[in-house]
Image 1 (cartoon, rainbow, N blue to C red):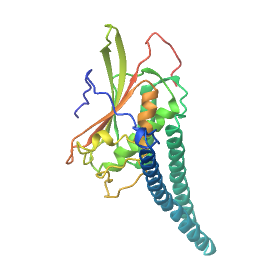
Image 2: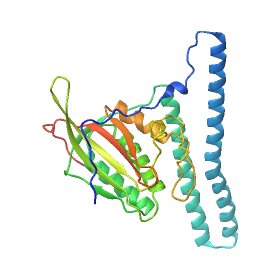
Image 3: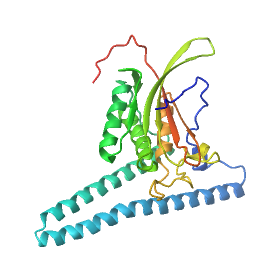
Image 4: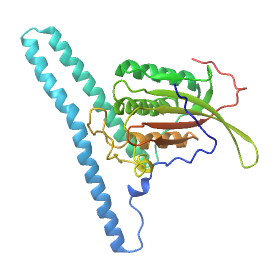
Length: 285
């Protein structure tokens, strides 16, 4: 199986561009009025999108609750259990949507909280790959050149990043197509000649790919790709996930970027993080 390649001349990733989402100071009343109107339209558009995305799980919960009541009257316990499982799944989906909305508000306000700790990136990636494979039933190959590697990041936030990237990979990859995660260690030279050690998490899907025109825009807050349909042809999402991922990685001292081959060649998302000095010893869990 082809291994990911990571060079030292990696282009700087595109961080979320919040300038288009925030009210900018203008030099004239007319410009301020136009900025107000643009912000209002953006907010209205996002609220309509949020309503649409939240309506789906709410409708499913209501319908399944009605079915559960009917099945309960008929003493069909198996059907009741199935309905309750669906209600639970849709509740979790809605919880995730609401959490993303809250994080988006914090991101715009510059208040996204990060609590870094020392952890083993290999173990964390292995854990997330295993979890995603269990949840989706999709095989995900995990390639690693080392048994452990220490980084200083917010473990919960990094799990959020990996969960998003892996969920997208499963969503946009048709059954039978490969999904791979690889860890690539890299060393770069600074301007003063000093060495810097990094680890790059590479998440590759087997989807349709992203066009050259859209690739620089996919990390923008609320941006949804026109080509962003899943393997079943559906287009969903609030356009929050990648923007949040980019901000989390950036404030962690790393980079997030993507490469893609349109027309069925798939996409690869790269998360590069600084590696701690190997002399630091911590308990690996």
